[in-house]
Length: 432
Image (cartoon, rainbow, N blue to C red):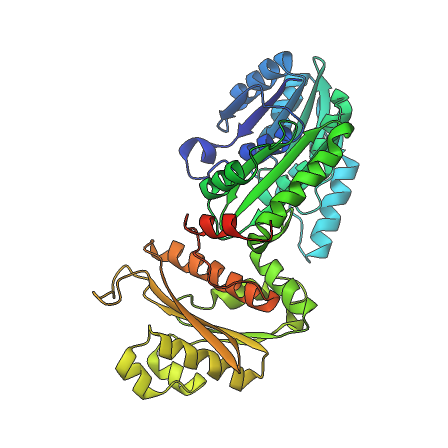
């Protein structure tokens, strides 16, 4: 089955917007055993769009057009499709109803520019957009199914899952007897995983395709089998893999680190508080980004200055003067202070040198101390993350959440994050 992609927009041509949508749908099609036939990117040029639609529909079974569904004059997909297939534009009642409901839910007053999103080719059918103002739409031309979708990634991804892939499966009569199991891991590298699998499972069956994809800060591992006869193989080998790397597995499918942490806290009926310096509240923001976080999160502290560490968390001036803000003593006092103030069951405290300046020979840029635990048992560790400031903050935040997750679940917290050394410990484990 030949599926082509047509991406539109001057911002894609100029590099102002990075095209992530084609990568997403390509990965989604890969689950069906399909690789895109042609991918083409064009700017906001009506004659070129019309020509591209006509050319690609002649050589493809399915053409996915992405972008150009907005309310402005440079959003040309509906008009281009109208001219390419010879179907005049008209105001589509279902598209208008969707737009009105979208606006009403947001107390938004529609303008004539907004109504442009409801002028669609006469012979098209609506593709529902659960999130955005513009519906998608589809039609057939030259024995090709043409699917038009919005360029906003969050809208596009949901439509791919709920609308576009099912339409492609039905149209192409694709055998969907494919079983896919996805696990998400944190704290190991792709190469580390593959090396251990090669050593531990030399008899890995060819019928179970093993794939790795980095989705910072986690790695997705995918187990794919084709045909119902191999469903059990998928189940057996995915379980073997999960058993081997159990402490690194945060969940299945699209599980986030923050989600895994909150689930662990909820399952244990525990509450957490955060005390942050170098991450500026990012750990608390991650925890509270999840629905239901009020049940597990009491509060957090962003204590950037030494004065705030003393005033809000009771860190002693002597510790700050003797050891400095980035030290084992200070983060342990920060964690204890956060628990004392909030009464939470567990806390995480962090202080580091995010850079690019501020380092010293004793504490170079990238040095970070973390302390975590209960009132009776606080632990601390030093990490060295020599990265750009933003990546440093994101990585430190992820490690902090994972340390909390491991502590709550009773897993080993002495983890050599992203190091190949842990491989030896995994292979020596007596559990397998």
